[in-house]
Image 1 (cartoon, rainbow, N blue to C red):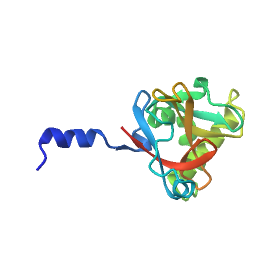
Image 2: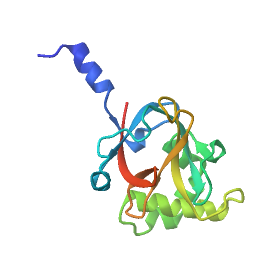
Image 3: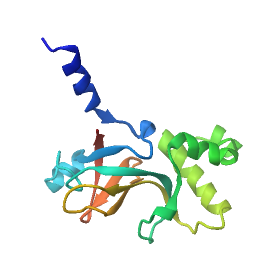
Length: 164
C-alpha cells in the first residue's frame, strides 16, 4: 500500500492537457501516437530534456519561431484578448467537427484582422528547451490538418504528450 506522500508525488508527475498549459511550466515533451511508432520514436523525449513554456501565439508558416510571436500566457487569456473574434457569430454558431477546428478558424480570422501578423499562420504553443543537448532551442507545437496537436523536431511531425 502506498502512503499519501507517495501518491502525491505520482500525481505531481502527471500528464498535462493542452487546456491546462500555462507560461512558465517546466515539462517533458514525449513523442506519442501512431506516427511516432512509424518513425520509431514512440515514448522518447522530443528535445532530450525539459522545456519551459513561453506562451501561446500565432506563427506564420515560413517564419522561424521567436519569442515575439507569443501573444498570451494561456488559452484563456488568448481567448479574452481576442474576445471579439471568439464571440463572433461565425465562430459561436458555425458548423465545426471539433473544438480544434473552431480554434483554427478563429486564428484565421485573427490573422485577417491583425496588421502585425502575416498569414497564412497557425496557433502555436512556444517553449524553450532548458536541459540537455538542445538547451536554448525554441520549439513549438501546432494544430495539424487532422486536427491534432503535433510537434515537429528533426523533420518528424508527431503527436505528443506533456508530462511534468
